[in-house]
Amino acid sequence: MNHIFRLWAFLLLLFSPMSGWAQDLKIMTVSRVPFSMVEAGRDTGFSMELWDALATELGWSYAIERVDSFTEMLGAIEDNTADAAIANISITASRESVMDFSQPIFQAGLQIMTPLGNESSSIWAVILSKDLLIALAGAFALLLGGGMLMWHFEKRHQEYFDMPASQAMFPAFWWALNLVVNGGFEERQPRSPMGRLFGVFLVISSLFLVSVFVARITAALTVDAIQANVNGLNDLYGKTIGTVERSTAAEFLSRRDLSFVPYHDPAALIEAFEQGEIDAVVYDAPILAYYVTQKGRGKARLIGQVFVPENYGIALPSGSALAEPINQSLLELRENGTYDAIYRKWFGSK
Image (tube, rainbow, N blue to C red; front, top):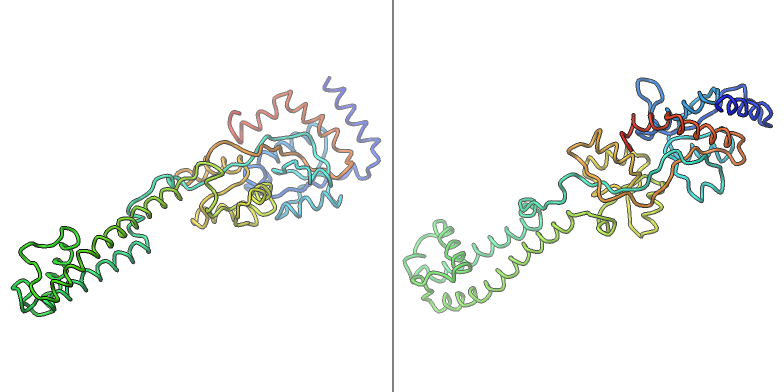
């Protein structure tokens, strides 16, 4: 059966109307770990190894041209200036309208990645936040100011306040703090008319101030806890999301009215994630899974299941005579176990 297939493929290539079969095929790719990358000066990755096995099966020679973006890579296919493109190229209706695809070479989809441990709220992070520190400073200033004003009214009427201003700062602050927290000292009730009036004002206003302060802390803790938890797509609203520009993930986020920060390539996206510039990443699930297990251990986690299932394929110019032999070879590689061996090498068991 195998020799019949090889003979059929040879005859197809021999009588194909395309010119230049004896020359190397021009194969476009773009760096997308772990599908296509350069290590130790050679092209490697799941997609590159699969293409090499396919070309070996068909007896083709080829030359790899690595470009910087999907736009440039797929542009060469659309313009028919390259024979094929392979990486993690999603098969979409819009792309299918201007080029052809092989049968799927990888089942993928989108997934969410967030920093590891952001699901738990740290009370110290809330307490040390800028807004809460400003509120604390304001509360201390009010207590000190109120205490010193009471010292001014009472310094000639009771022994507790009978001291110079420089020595009265802490006793005055302590008196105001006790008034707010405990209702004051019974034996140190204000004795001057202005002191008594001001004391009543402090007691009444303290009820309001304490309520506002407690509500402020509670709200800060609640908001922090809500913002820290990302368990699905609906939790992404209001977060700073990152993805790769012009990707299927970018198209999906736009359809869901989720604003995002676009990055030129996955490397820039991951760097921004590691620098804490974004709260979550939405991108191709296998690329995120590879990062989490290989380089992001202790830094990142994947959220939920894969959504928006999609397939990767080999992109070909419209009407390419390569499509049929490529599809036949892909079936052969799946049947003889070569595809599974390459898959396990890069992603483990299915």
